[in-house]
Image (cartoon, rainbow, N blue to C red; front, side, top):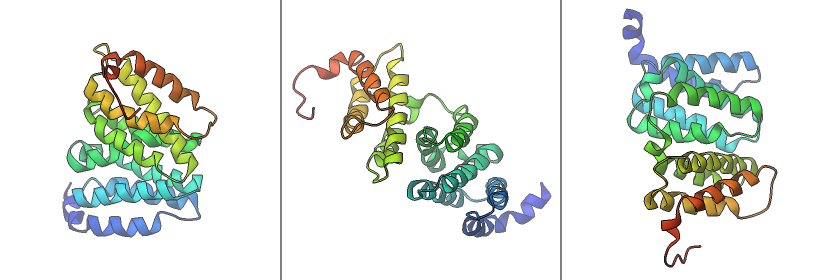
Length: 222
């Protein structure tokens, strides 16, 4: 504990240095830096942890490389393993949970798995998805707007799971929840067909069956 106290004033600075080095040609080196970033997040400031999460998300959103998206996932997984208590509340939680929920539907199995591990480490400390529905759907819509088809498909799969989870709620889907979900569902169903899109259509069918009150009257946005 004493060593952590002594190093704490320098943690933010070292996290910045790790961000500059974590993308490396050597997988072992990248993994080591990602792990170190998780340990440092225990004593870094909330602002710097948030910057690290945004850095990981930027890698995920902008890279066409499975390997770099896997490094992004390794950073988040390290935070979820070694500093989960630092992302329980506030801006850090709001940034990481919606992103991880989307990324755990990645089309590449190894990338999907590392984000699934992060979700299991973090989501158990929070309540159901409905607790952060607005921010989660906002993250999904952001990925649906991406020019990268792999991200659109990832977001669509995430939306299908979110819709199914909420539709399976014994209390049904409220009009307020339906108002949040419907624009994203409409966007996910538009455009070309792709392998797996049927999951979105099945989720929409379930959504319609659970939101009869939502469809009453005129809905000019349909």
